Image 1 (tube, rainbow, N blue to C red):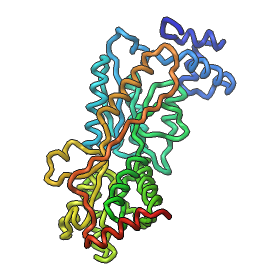
Image 2: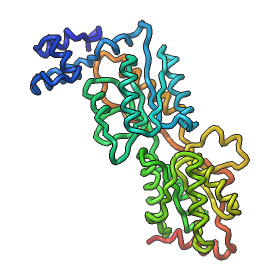
Image 3: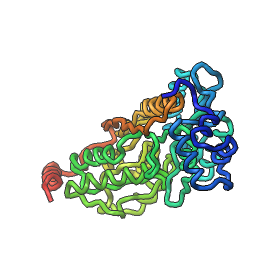
Image 4: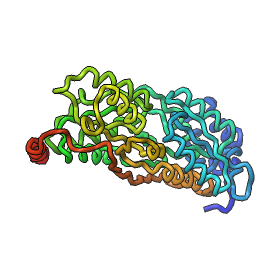
Length: 360
C-alpha cells in the first residue's frame, strides 16, 4: 500500500508508456493500441489511480464533493435518500450534489457527464434499467476507475451496492394477505425503468406459488411510480371488473401507487380494507399524517443512502483499490389499518384458510 496518492507519472512509469499515452487512454482516444490500452488500464486499477479532478479528495483538502443521481424529483422516497446521503457527506466534509434523471436513460447519461465535469469525487446512482437502456456510461465509470455506488443492482457491473431484498420483502407482504384468507390477489406494478418493480412482482409470485392462490400475468396491473398512476390504474381495473371476479387484496409497487389505488377504490364505493385490502411499499414519512393508516413494507431509506455515501467515501479516500461491497439492508413489514381478512362468513373464511394452507 503506497503512502501517497498515485499520479499519472506513476501510471506511466509502471506501464512503460508516456504520460501522453496514459492521458489518451483516460480520454478514450482511438490512437492507442489495444494491448497498450489494456496494460495501462490494468495499472490504473492496480494503483487505484484517478485523474486530477478526483485527487483533490485526499484528506485535508477542500472542495470535496459527491453526486447523487435519483430517478424522480417529485417522489418523497428520493427525498429521504437525499437526507441520508447528505448526512454522511456532511460528516466527512463533502458537499452533496443531486441530479434527477426522471427515469430517462439519456438524462441519466447526461447527469453522469455533468457531475464528472463538475469534478465530483464519486457518484451514488439509482440507475435507469429497462430492456433498451444503454449502460455504457456506467461501464465507462468502472473502466476509468471512477468511484460509484449503486442503489439498485445491475447484473454484469461489478460495483458496490446498497439495497433491500425486494423479492423477499414483497413475498412477506403477499404471504400476510394469504394468511388473512385472501385467495384473489393482484399487484399494481411499477415503472419499466426499475428492476425493483419486477423483483416485487416476483415476490408476490413466490408467495402464491407456496400456497393454493393462483397468480398469473393477468394479475399484474401496469401502474407506475406516482399517486396518479395508481389512481388511474385503480379506476380502470376496478371499474371494469365484476363484483364476482373482484380481487379482495392488492399489493403495490410503492406507497404512492397504493394511495392512488385507495382513492380510486373510495370513489368507486369500495371500502379499504373491508372490501379490498391494500399493501404499499417504502413506508414514506408522509404516511404518518394520513387518515388511512397504510400497511406497507418499511425500507430504511435514510440508512441506505447514509451507508452508500460512507461506502463511496471509503472508495474515494482509499490509497488502494477496494473490492466491490454489497450491503443488503433489512426491510420490515409494517401492518396498520389497510389490511384485514376478506369479507365472508366465518365458516367460509375458515374453509378458505384451510385451503390456502394446504400443500400442493
